[in-house]
Length: 262
Image 1 (cartoon, helix red, strand yellow):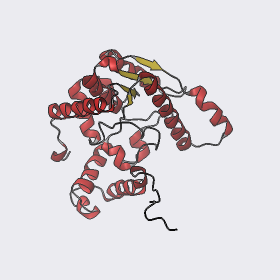
Image 2 (cartoon, rainbow, N blue to C red; image 1 turned 135 degrees about the vertical axis):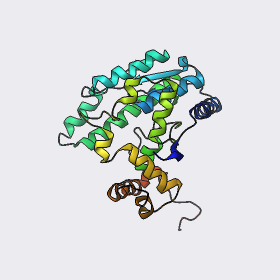
Image 3 (tube, rainbow, N blue to C red; image 1 turned 60 degrees about the horizontal axis):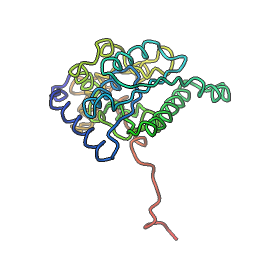
Image 4 (spheres, helix red, strand yellow; image 1 turned 45 degrees about the horizontal axis):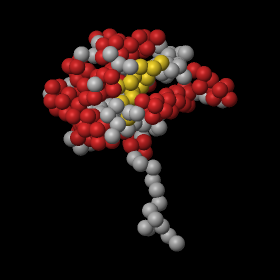
């Protein structure tokens, strides 16, 4: 792993906690609602939010579908129990089935996007009921690869982890005491049986972290990254993902009233 991706965990933890507390207080809503999936990203974001505003002010929402892995819900409860969080369980199966019956030939991607947006609908509703802000759980690697659903898991009031690569998320999660079972399992959005992030992407997060860092923060080209020992095919695949999903990281374009033709 590149030395530049090393992390001062104590300093970073304090920095993120200060960011979360300050933003929540400034918004007049010193509470958070989070979709807790049982994965390392949502677990870390939840733990940091609890440090920022207190566990009683962070509501975890567990949002399984009937085809979700039971282990995901089990791991979510490891975090809930460890932090002493208020929580709600809301199974989304009954909400999704009318859509799936209407379009029986929907592929996995369409179904996964619909489920992600359904979960976010519930989170925003619960944030109003709880008087809190929806806590984002995306990391920088996912963000740069476009590995998120617009208006689904890509929606949030604040993104405390979006500056951290996946490897840095893992290190910080270990530092704050996220359970070992969560740290060691394969990253997955749990949208269908057997789904894992790395299988779907076609490369590992460890490779993506380093390549993305070199492409974006060091501003190197493909040839220069390959010269540092990375496989050309993987470098090109990472770059394609980043370029083809750039629209996800931009605000929707609008015609300016100032420059609009009459």
